[in-house]
Length: 130
Image 1: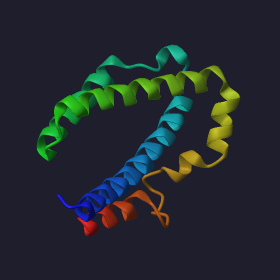
Image 2: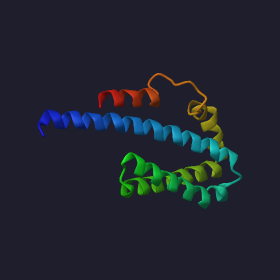
Image 3: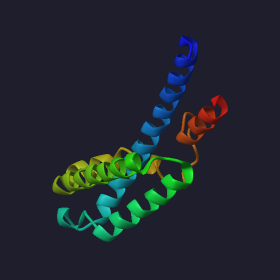
């Protein structure tokens, strides 16, 4: 592999990483919204929901050629960190209100139109460059 080919491939990975960060940020905003709907820190983890998510991720990983040895630990970590974030928000209700007041949750709403530089536009750019 020539150096220029290596640089091209790394640039593609960098664009994909940018998309992943935007998508995880959108997910995090939804986690904050959901925290506001829960009754307290003890209600954060839902084992049945976690199992369903991991099953869905495993199936999607298989369909898309993502190694399950990568997918499952990544999602377990994402779910754990999301639960911890919800617990923190629920223990400090002023932080939850501040986050929701900042409009962060609204920006992640599926009903919101895509913003310039949104994840969907970025995904399209990554696909075009492939």
